[in-house]
Image 1 (cartoon, rainbow, N blue to C red):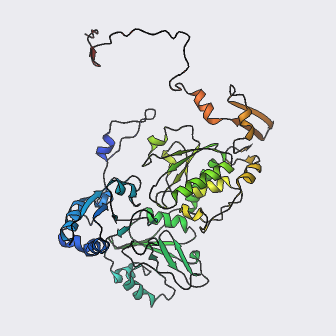
Image 2 (cartoon, rainbow, N blue to C red):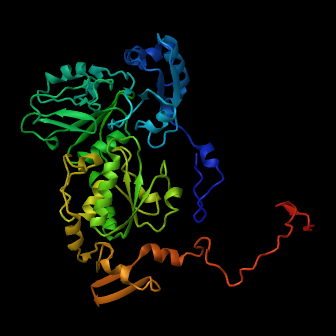
Image 3 (cartoon, helix red, strand yellow):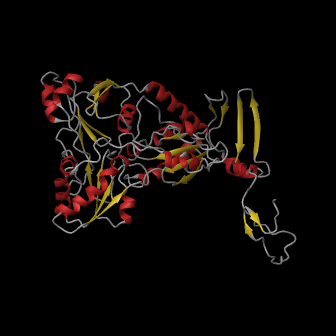
Length: 482
């Protein structure tokens, strides 16, 4: 079904897009009572609630599992040995893979139970139970169709005899083991951490002396944001996937090189940007405020003007209201940070891409980071920098987009430029053009409407109140349209 597109000039529509939208309903949805208890492990949910004495429980569902939400809420209340209040969260503030702690706090929830696919980003405010659903995996069929590894121990044991170097990743959810549980076993700290790699809520137990790029990765499940994020992050690995629902396997080809080239183009656009908008794409992932402060420091070191936006779920119309912004940087969970910005009017980058564009010492070595927490102090990819030193060492750079030398930051002497001349060009030679301008003031001066004018007019005498028109917009009383 064709979806109505936004008008090219008027960023609004008749609302039919929402009515025509098709939601993907999970194939496991709409189960009977016995299937609900088995698939969602209701006994474990009730044990989680009663063992901690929670009274108000928030249930968060993605759109695909909403058909089961009412039945699950009623069933949990029915089989719980204690009196509890259960309420359902849908239409999350940001991505459905993230824990919506803000919405849960509005209901004074004691805990939150998250259903469906999750990005496994750590949170700090509420105890969370992740319920992924008990998807059946046939070990023999998996062996026959894929002949590789899955995280299920039965399949692992079946294949390990044939593949001695097989390793299986396990899920790790936060470090609050006393109050946080998941469908997988929580892993305690190992004695030998040198060969363990923890990223994106998962731990890979690597053989000694091996790195992730030495392995072939096999993914179990349907294609989606999780697989895309892993393929971008481990872009040196070959990927194969097995979908147990369809009982099919295939070699994944994301065209990683093409995707990385596109992201590198966005980095070049960010280098030339003078005004950067920081878009908050999560309020639940731990350390997002520290990341926001770090991005502001990075942009200050690059002499770029910054604005911060919190607009909820991002769409084209919302960001199109801020045409003064040259590029946006999105602070979101790893699975939602890679937006395809071709539909947007301005590029949208990740925090890692912005650091490559703004910090001289940050170089792209082929790795790709989608988890912004790795950039913070103590993270695997943290880079220390001095704001004053970065500001002093700003020289014209060669633009691969325009083919000219140009400054990629606001000059310190911009403040001394005559505001009547919002932009001035000084030609140095054929290959170098230095541009001075104050972008915000330039855009404001070029706008046809600049807002209400608070400057008093020469004629400031009072105006008498007169009677207005009567009727409706289709026909006022003083109009004769026939």
